[in-house]
Figure 1 (tube, rainbow, N blue to C red):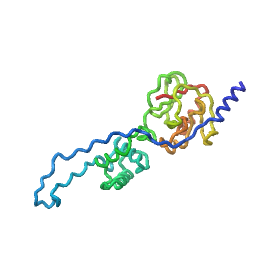
Figure 2: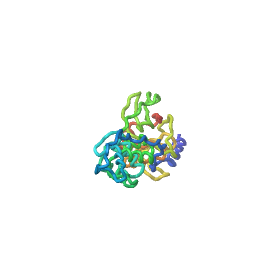
Figure 3: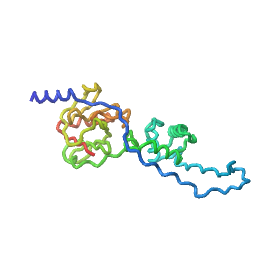
Figure 4: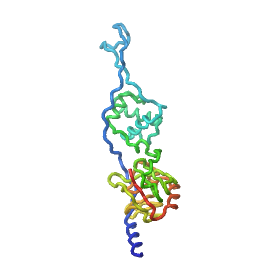
Length: 271
């Protein structure tokens, strides 16, 4: 028995993970279809004062798609794309606000387009060519997605049911959800393992011996990977990642979870 405890302690002593920066990697979508052109051109006469010197009618102005005050998922996608090219620093909100206006103006001016601050078809096509379709976490970098349905393996016993799809953790007992919380995972180079595990060690004030960072309320389930509180996740949301651990950013929720979870409780990590 003493040897087993010593082995566990040795394993934990060399384990641990911490936050790391991560970039979004997606495929560049095909160019957006050009905006609808006007179906007719106003008739001009040679004597009209509005006729250009070359005798050709003025080109119609591009159609405005969205402008200040608009709201919705389309605005959230616009903001995520502006973030990708570093014109918008704040996270998407779904509201076309003052920072979004300034970001659009900056993007337009840099590319020789009229600095209107309104998102027209020409600006949108140019932005789409330079960016990729935002992933769900880019649209909701600070959470907000509902928890995914629990995996069938979560429906019996005491389970930490962790969905990579919705980035949520359900604490379940005999098929009943006791609490839910938002989580994040490791990057593509240090992925969080998937499968069925068990909590084998708990450490309230754990500090990673590898990265020398705090891992409060750590509940280890696979080698050095644990469910634990992350102040970096609380501050940066999904613009960061762990080195394989399951990060929780709500300290109150994970403190309550830590008090309830026992060694031997099941952990299910799934898509």
